[in-house]
Structure formats: C-alpha cells, structure tokens
Image 1 (cartoon, rainbow, N blue to C red):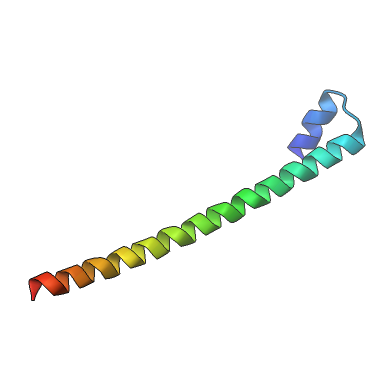
Image 2: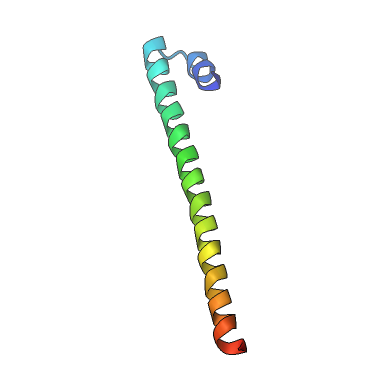
Length: 62
C-alpha cells in the first residue's frame, strides 16, 4: 500500500502503479524465499561441521 500511495503522490497512472506494486510484492516474496533457503543451509552446514568434529575427536582422542 505504501508503494501505491507513493507513486500516486507523484501523479503516475493507476494501472502503472498497480503493476509496479505487484512487481515489488513479487520481489519481496522472492527475498523471503531466499532468506528461508539461507537459513536451511546454515543449519545443514552446522550439522555437517558437528559431525566432522565428532569424527575428528573420535579418531584422535581414542
């Protein structure tokens, strides 16, 4: 809604404003998806590193 109001304030036609707002909304959805994927990758890397540390400890401490 903020985008719509900002574009209307500078006197852009309503159909162009709606298209721009829809495009920005889609971009926000894509960014949210990337943030979720990044979070999952961080957990996966943490798990892999924990397993590697456990293997290293078992090999050299026993």
